[in-house]
Length: 214
Image (cartoon, one colour):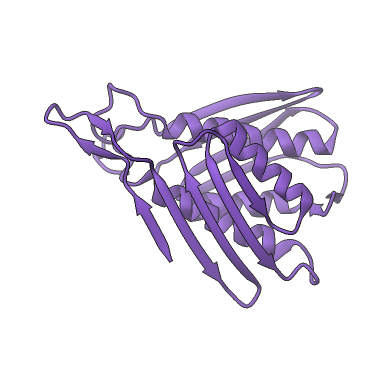
């Protein structure tokens, strides 16, 4: 089930006037996971995250806080099997929520990028809300797990998210060695890049594309 409230309308001058929040609510239930995601792209960073995986909760809280997104994520997953279905399916639903909340993308910057430092670690995140999904995720890890989060699931999460959101997403480790820092810097860099990509620019009155559509 998907619900969305458009936050804008066209003024007589052709500019986007912000009226209500860009919200999305998506529920997805399968034999492996039961997921609810509520997203407000124009929030203040409030989060209510319950995935059953403590470190994943921490990552999604960081994403919401540093992107200034209000985010609710409630997940019941088959964690008795492993963390894979819970993390991947959450990526699918969060990506759908981003796509729905972004709406027609008129007036937004479309592109965003950020270099996120975290102690010895530096991660670059770049986003293009192009409508064409693609992921480049160059984040090498030296351990198999951080908390209850398998490090190989970082790729799977962002792959699922980028494809369901139809975005081009690049995440690259510039330098760093602590696996906790690398993972957290990636989530925060993505948040900052997405915040920039979804923000409005008064010079953009339609979609930022020579094609006229995204």
